[in-house]
Length: 397
Image (tube, rainbow, N blue to C red):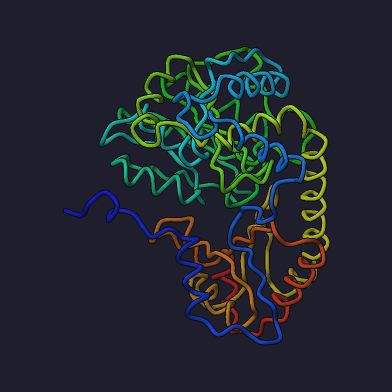
């Protein structure tokens, strides 16, 4: 019998990086790396200065409370309450070593081997990988052409071993922003079934909608709701690993067991930086959001020229454009070829769906966290210039 890690696939971003080592890059086309949704620029100078000062404090170099520094838990609770319009207490917050760990801790607290979690497809691959490694069955929830999941369709998938439904909004990989009514319908389904709705809001700060994107927190604590968050994207703290769980206080003792066993605590320096960001960098984050929304607009402006070549934009938002290509070859073959042929590193849709799902062969994910409007124009020009055998109309339908 294979081990838990053998039961899942290789990390997709690491696999894509290996393509670079194996490829000969075109000498006249500098690499456009749109494979990973993580900013590569450092934190703003004011935040780096605060972090440098924190290094002088002895406590920065010690273990901290397992569930996170009290001041950061309180600050995020206050921020969450302001944003979502409902009361949030510090004892509803746990700080984790990144949002992936927040998901892993939540799943560990809610499930046991043989349980099930419903996940819309295309899925976020690290969610699927953790479920595999936890011995939890990921039950695929198909989405329509708009890539929005349906609570009515999910209801038919909920069985006696179902413990949770896991959503990501704004979505990774598709960028789609789930309407408030969609999230409310899933919350009502979770409550009726006695399970938990997990909403990963890693990209909350780059939602195109003004104000709160949903009202799930308006009534205060909800025993059927867990929200996940990442400070990495908002403050460029990817290397410092700071995420969060916002959920029922009753969940926290179980989360604490997991965190104490795996990492003891999230890195202290990252937590100090996150607290500083919440207190002082609201305007800066607003500027970052405006930049990302500008890149989204640049993709919308470039898309008609690509559509004329048979491409489709299936989803767009946060850091992502999710495209359907018109070519005969499957996306996993195409994505590897794009490195040598066009100087583009992106991820194929096959990395976000089951191996037997044919839709992945038509899809590519473009992550534009590190490519500005000029780079987007260059990227779309290279894609439009591709000359490869086309799939039949039936295959593209």
